[in-house]
Each structure stands twice: as structure tokens, then as C-alpha cells.
Length: 370
Image (cartoon, rainbow, N blue to C red):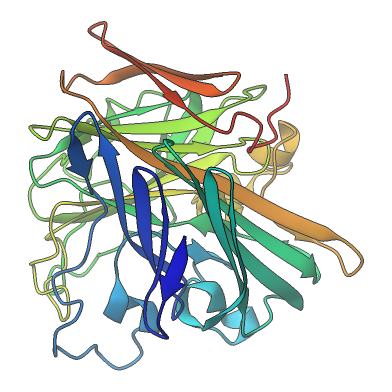
């Protein structure tokens, strides 16, 4: 069912529910009932709902930083006269329809501003007994190729094990998130590239393991993993240490070939972060060539060369869309994940120690080929 007010709307099906904030298009909370417990693992910044003010020039979404939201353009959005991450992450979404069918619930919202000339529709849907949120962002018209990404944030109070579908390489942007020691700290080399995520170059000359969170104290870092060509399902799995649960992010790697990781763990000393924004891992799935420090200057770029999308292509006479699935399940063993596959209408998750879960999913939602 769908209920709500001007500030928060609620979408629920059997065993799964979300709270949606139309201002900024934020899935602020998601709860899954699984194996006799309620699982809610999305992050919320400690200043949300408080009175601490943002510094001048901060994007509006920072005041409500929580859960998952959609970014277009991802990063620099000045071409739309928009704040960081674009109007989808900072503007108003207006409900245009709801539906409750046999075993499912969905809602549709329209963004109050255009994105590169496109009208943007957000569709969120749930199914009874599925531990997933199914998301579509539909662009009607527009022009150009724009960077896009979902921006899910996972709360990792005790750290986590990160695993991914196979990647060609991992790469940082051209500049560190925090390069002024008076403001904060970044741990990685910018720009840098590595094929082994367990040995990524660190600024002190050592290496760090990107498959562990955190990989250092008090740091703010961003790094992207680029999908292997020919993959049909892109996935990210985050095992929360000591929590007995697991976060899952699923995508079509032909449309969104990047997994961007934002490690935010006390590495910013200025307001509103004030060294207190800890235990947050952004799992930002998208297509955003401009976020890469070396690959963005290659000709042809590594996405186009591999038949993948460097961004979302818009056309005045066409409809383009981005689909994304996030979920959470009980994972009592606490082991890292070895593999994730879709088998018809089930998702099968296998751990490195032999644990296995098989859960229902809309197997055709991501429009995977092969």
C-alpha cells in the first residue's frame, strides 16, 4: 500500500516497507522482515532532523543525507544550474500515481524540474515476500550524455566485507575528496588505478584493501570499480560485520557499468560533518565516466571500447531509463559473498564459506540479456 503526507510517503508490501521523502527523492528508510527479524541497514547522517546549519553553498541534499537517492547529473550538475548531484537529488518530486495489485505495491513521482531538457519519472515498487526495492528512473526526451547513479548508503557500525561482480580495474578521480589537512583527510592516491582491489595505492606509499570497510581511521575517499565486459548481472554485496545481515545492490552492467564506493568515516572536520560522519559506505551504482581520473581522458574511453555506457544517452524523441535493485537479507554466517546469480524468479547468494540463501526476485526487472 501507499500512504503519506507532504513530507514522507510510505510504500509497503508483505515483509518489506520504505519511507520516501519527495523533497530530494530520498528513500530514507527501508525495512525487510526476514528470518524472524527486522533488517534496516541504510545510513542516516547524524545531523538529519537537527538544527545544525549547513555551510554556505552546500547542496540541499546534505541536510537530509540518508538512505538512497538518484543523481543526474551525478557530481557536477552546473549545466542544469543545479546543486551537486542534480535536481533529482535536490528538487521536489510530485506523486502522479499509485498502484496496489496482487502481491505488489508501487508509486510514481515526477520531478519538478527538467534534467538536460528531459522530464524525469521515478517509479518505486515492492513485491510481497521479496526483500528488494525495485527502482526505475525514466527520462522522457532531453539531449546529451549525462553521468547518472543511484546513491545508496549502508550503515557499517562494525565494519564490513565488500564483494563485487568481476571488475576490470578500480580507479580514483583526478583529485582527492579532502586534500587540505586543515579540513580533512583522504587515504588513497588520486588519480590511481589497480586491477587488484585488495592492493590499491595509498597516499603514504602503502596499499589498502578496498574489500574491507573501513581501510583506515578518519578518512574520506572515493573509488570506482569498472565492470568486466560481457557480464549480464552487476552486483555488490556488503556483509555487515557482527550484524548477521547483508546488503545487496543489483544492476544491468550494460547500462550502469560502474560501482562507485564512497568511504565516509570521520574524514571531514568541518560542519556539518565535524568528524562525526562515520561508518558510512556509499554504494553508488551508475555510469559516470567523468568521475574517473585517468579513464576519462582515454580515446576511446574504456566503456565505449567495451560496448558499455559511459553515461545515460538522452534524445528529444526517445525514452531512456535506469533500473536498480537494492535489498537486504539475514546472513547469520557473517561471511563474505562469493557469488550472486539470478535463476528465473530467485536470487541465489553464495558465501565464501559455503552459506547459501535463495530469495524471490523479479528476475526480468533489470532486462538482462543472455
